[in-house]
Image 1 (tube, rainbow, N blue to C red):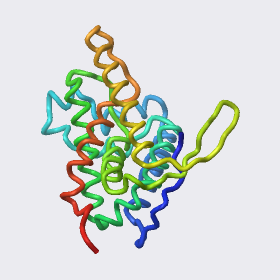
Image 2 (cartoon, one colour):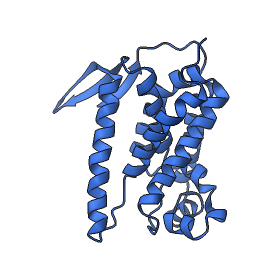
Image 3 (cartoon, rainbow, N blue to C red):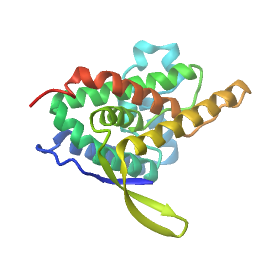
Length: 222
C-alpha cells in the first residue's frame, strides 16, 4: 500500500514540508555523486553510528539531526518523501510553520535515540527521515483519525486505488514495525546483528509524535 493523498485540504502553503522534501532530495543527489568509498565516509560523518554515539555523545549528538537527511537508495527516499508529502502538510497547518519544523526535527532525534537505545554497541549506521516522519504519522492519527487516505494498492498483477481510514493505514504501519522490531530483538539475543530497517526508530518516532504533538499546538483553535 502506498498513500497518495488525504482528504483534508490545507489553508496554508506548507513551506517547511516542501523545504524538507527539497533538502532531502538535494542531499541524496549529492550522495549519488560520491564514490562508494566517499559515501561510506559521508555516512560515517553524518549518520548515527550507535557505538560512536555511546562512546562520545558530546561529539556525535549532531548526527541525531544530520542523519535525518540521508537515505540509502531511491526507494528509501521516494517512500519517505511520499509519506511526508501526504501527511506533513496538515500537521504543518495545525501547528504553524516553525513549531512544525521543531516538532519534526525533535521526533527525528528522539527516534534515532530509540534505535540507539536498543543497540548501543551497534556499528551499523542509522539514517533516514522515517523516524521524523513516523512522528508526523503519530500526530496525524490523533488529529485526523477518521480522515480517509487515497491509497495505491497492489493486488498481484493488478493495481488499484482505494480510500483507507488514516487510523487503519497508520495502524498497519505500526503493527508491521512492532512485529519486525520484536523479531529483530530476538535475532539480537541470538547474536545476530541485523541491518536494514530501523524499526525501533519508527516505533519511537511514532510514540513521541503522539506525545509531543499536543504540546506543539496540534489541537489549537483557529
